[in-house]
Image (cartoon, rainbow, N blue to C red; front, side, top):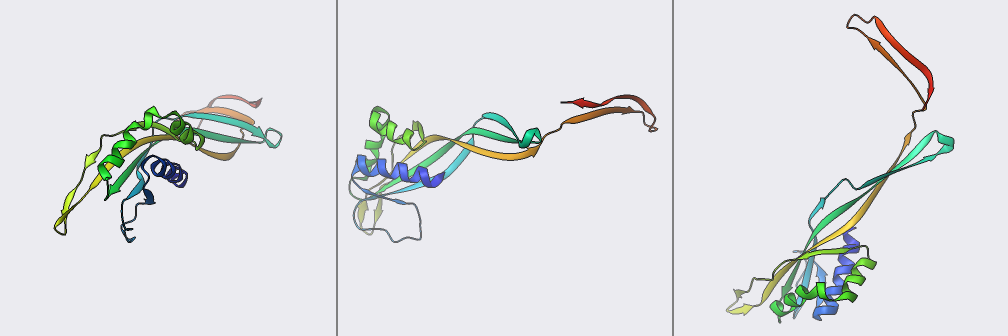
Length: 175
């Protein structure tokens, strides 16, 4: 899902700020001029158990169990050079732009929160290089499935510590 989130956020960042956005990778050579880097996997947290559905298959002998749960993602966007602080500030208004929210939702991504802009401008090679960072909190739904066998009949037997059977319930009960 991180690839889909990156693509969705990249489109939004480039459209709202006008600067090119790249995946954050410290080993890449920095492009000339203003740009943004996006780090999707700052953190990902399953926020609740979600829902569990069961579908019986193979004439009732097996079941497919599917769990669908929300995941909250923390995405960090760094802006470099040019008007980095202004560009990061433009993203703070992301909540007020319905087309942007719709664009993210169409990608399966919901916008939860937007942090304040942090000014990280520093003196680099005898000149100031503008830098700013903003963090978006997003949510998606993940789904996992597994096929399991179904218990069709069961029996219950109660024994004491010596192994003597104290009670037995029928084994021909169908679940």
